Image (tube, rainbow, N blue to C red; front, side):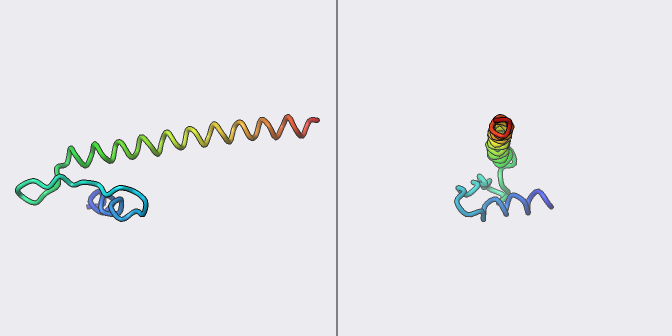
Length: 69
C-alpha cells in the first residue's frame, strides 16, 4: 500500500514528468514499467547526491586552504 501511495505522490511532484502507469486491460499499472521509471528517478537522485557530496568536499578543502593563508 505504501508503494502505491509513494508512486502517486511522485505523480504530483511539481516540475517532474508524470509517471506513466502503463495501464493494462485490467486497469492495474504495469509494475515493471513503474519500477523501471522509479529506478531511473532513484538513479538520478543518487547521482545528484554524489555530485553534491563531491562539491561539498571541494568547498571544505578550499575553506581549509584559504583559512590556512
